Length: 349
Image (cartoon, rainbow, N blue to C red):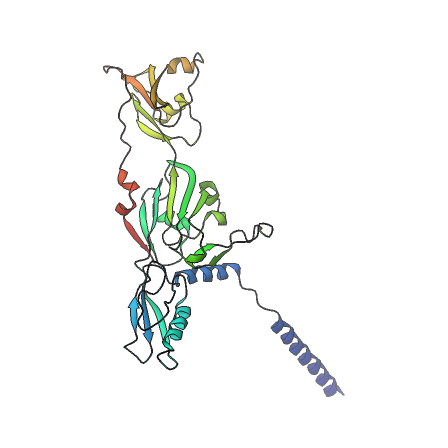
């Protein structure tokens, strides 16, 4: 009797296990969001781009093999013995191989074709310059985000205005914003991306990012950087403090700044400086306007503290030197940073 009870117990347990396995098999395992996104970004680098060296290998034949690049329209440039041109831009190696095989099928019986990207080093370079310590160019060979490029460029300087602009030209990459109906757009799919060919891209894109949102870790403020992107960390417009101050310098107009505060930021007035004789040279309607100020009266609330404007030149008069009648010439720095072709090149692989 006891053996029979044990038999029923194990039989019921066995049935429960089978039922559990059947139910779990019908429930798909969700793909983690971070893994699915990583796969998407990695796939973009594996698509054919302008500048890639492409190899077409017809298995078992040497005569029909081909090696070359894409022409400006995105087609394989002069592939042999194929009647219709094969479009390759932003397509996978497998898809291009299938089209080439179809073209060769008129000459060969059941051709087997393999397509490989041999060299990605000639893809368009990305550029990062502006208010960063080391402006430079990047040859991108793997998925990379904005914050990583800023870090390897030494970080953002105090000249930054608080904004970053990304110019994304069409056809230089294979990733673009997904076009969704405005009524269906929400926070979860607003930044969804998909692969497109150059013919589907409507034109260049401008992406504006706030630095405070990037520093706060907001995902939408840290986009993937693609081949050909031009990234500008926008510099704030300058104000120059010169003359009898401890540390003559250029300061940035990130916010409203008064004359007394600006001079304090430059280390204050020196022994040779005369705080009663401060001159502000201001550009006004293509002319130079001269504003005289007295720091001593400003401290005693006898005179209004002047709010400075972009490109103002503030000079504290020094003893033994004549007072200027015209604004001094200001050295604005090395203009080579404005020419991306002269920036150092870094490979991201």
